[in-house]
Image (cartoon, rainbow, N blue to C red; front, side, top):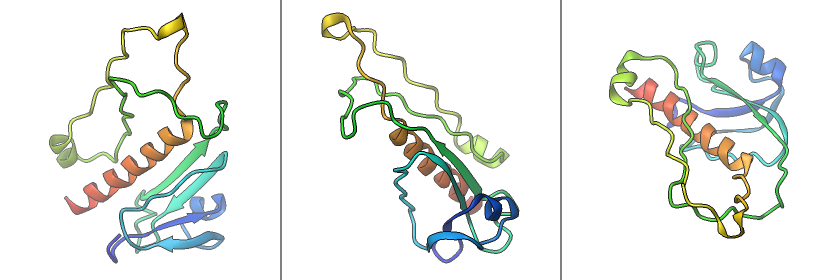
Length: 142
């Protein structure tokens, strides 16, 4: 971002060809980019600056439909899990940021013996998307 990067949602054909034709909405020019993925399906994002997209600065996300109750939040857990998102390969980044292991699942059972509902997939995907954008930005600026 900051006049060196942007985020633009595009159709699959534009994603595959790394061009800004068939854009969906306007580009996001300031960071950090926060995008709410509120519909199921495939979503495609590219950076339109220079050859960034051709060099791999693009992201395709598939959002699955939610099976939970809309608006329902899962109960707080004492040991939340953190999604690990692979980042572009860079030996410099690998030295600075070793992979984060998943947190252990809580060992206590919930009252009544039933497991809590799974976390919303859209929240996990949003977190993964934001981590991916952060990884791309770190790779470029380091």
